[in-house]
Amino acid sequence: MGKAMGGEGDGSGAAADAASALVKLRSALQGLAPKLCPSPAPIAHGTPGAALTAELLERLYKGEGARGRLDKLLKTGGSSASCQLCSGALQQPSWSLDWEVDVAKRRMSPSRCQLLCGACAGIRDLPALIKRLSFDQDAAASGSEVLRHFLAVNGHDAAEAHLLQDAVSVAHAMLVIQKELRLALARGPPLQELLGDSGDSNDSKGSLAGKRGRDESEVDGKVVSGTKNKKVKKKA
Ligand SMILES: [Zn+2]
Image (tube, rainbow, N blue to C red; front, side, top):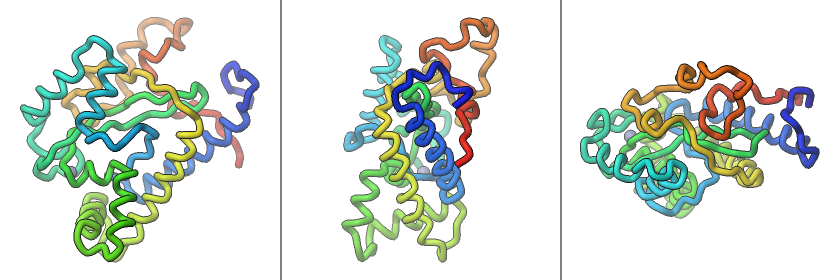
């Protein structure tokens, strides 16, 4: 654990294991579901996506009017009138957050906020998806609808139906690990950027923080960019 930051001694070995497991799982998930995957984020689901996102962003970006901004964006259909994941019609639109997890610091921060159609949002919501898949065992109605959407958006063909089940398993494994880490929620990029209309703005906006010299570097949750690859790599 050479590079680990100030390792407080307690369980940093376990954290390194978790980190390396998460790296592997994440890349597996990426392979199974490159565009639309169930979200492994350990946040309380069960609240409809839009309400949950507003609630979380209100909490993380206090006093910045997150809820109002989301409502406004929703009314205007965001940057486009289509789902930001599948480009389909925005039926039952819902917000969905991507999260970046920093195992060493035990925290997770939103990295992207997308406006999704109901079908995509339904697949992003892992606990709801699991329920749906296990209760619709004959998969006749909603199950096959979900499956079709999942396969189409990810560019798989119909014969690869097992990929959905695999993606669910992998995402669930990630969720369990991340839950155990008891990650604290932290701010991600500035709200405006998070909700930005560029859709796929990545962490490349270093210019904001870049100028202030690196002795101040590790600021508290302001910009948690570019930390993705710095995780301690461990040879299994
Ligand atoms: Zn969609």
